Length: 476
Image 1 (cartoon, one colour):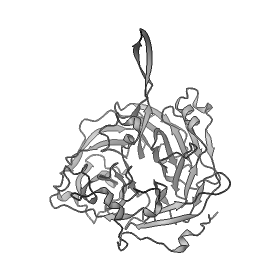
Image 2: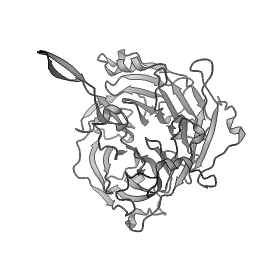
Image 3: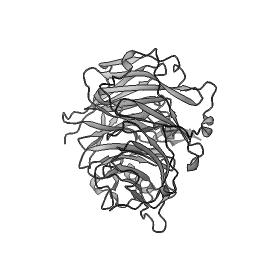
Image 4: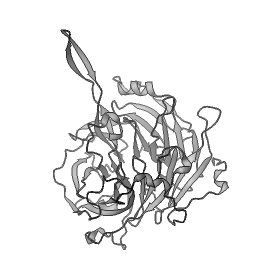
């Protein structure tokens, strides 16, 4: 397949944008206080290309220490993909949403489904110092250069240099369309991809090496739709992944220690086929009882798993850890919360979670978005996680076009939440992007979230029946 080169940044886009910050939102995004509501800020729709936007992701690279300098100011920047294009927008604090760059795949038959921020490790810098008349070279810490990974129907993951628009490299290996991408929170040079070919692959963005493949007789039996990395490496340096697929199953995968393998992959200079790729064919947890339909969205909130299915339910649950044999499968889980999402009985409606794990948001088939506040201050204590629905309210001063016509509902395919939870973006069908900004309680303190638990709230249901902790047997 021909390599798709990324286009250069577009100075002005043909987008019909409504950017008008509501009085209650302007200048409050970074103020401290509990988020009580989200108010609409902007609507954007390309007047030429009305392709469905299947994915939107905020830049979270600043969470990695060595990316702080390179990603300063990118915390309010998100990327989205639709058709052959990947667009990058900045959510300015004034309320304006500005197109910063646009990239287009060369392959006319390409349709992009997913994108993810990642990084390429740059070469070591060194400086010369003169000490006692002797020149010495001192190494400076390595830095990571922000990049974007995009993928879709073409089965190739393309990595783009955000600054120049140049194609860094193609990650080739999948045998079918790629539905989801994820970056490891602690090492953004490591990404994973989920494909229709029943597999998940973990890559080194630096070299294009396939570090590990998660697939086999005990893997998924239908296309993999979603995945997420656990935020921490295991005590022995391994990696954990959660995946959801069209076989109605959710699986948690764990690798043996990978530190030395990742280091080798990052510096690999030989033929890619000569690298000894690790194959993980047995998940540490598997169940098709968490959901009864396609699992199109998954994520981690500390040690708690979050998953959503076509049944219109978002569930927070804890997978068991198998005892005895290392990497044996577990099948039990404990349900913590069950959050119904109305009018979401359609596949490929994905939730978004902020990297600070304080906000979760999910859309539906009618253009509505619901958000929940997550209390994870005392993680990993699962019992202390509480969720409070946050209303998405309209503001009278906003442009009338912001109201979606109920007679022609617009499906929200994915929600993206900024790292601090202050901005929610909805990626919708027909090329529509909607933005909401947080309205914070004056003088409030985010620590107040610890005590916000409303058991009478209709928007969620905490099911604490004893039978939820029963052994979940996989239906082979």
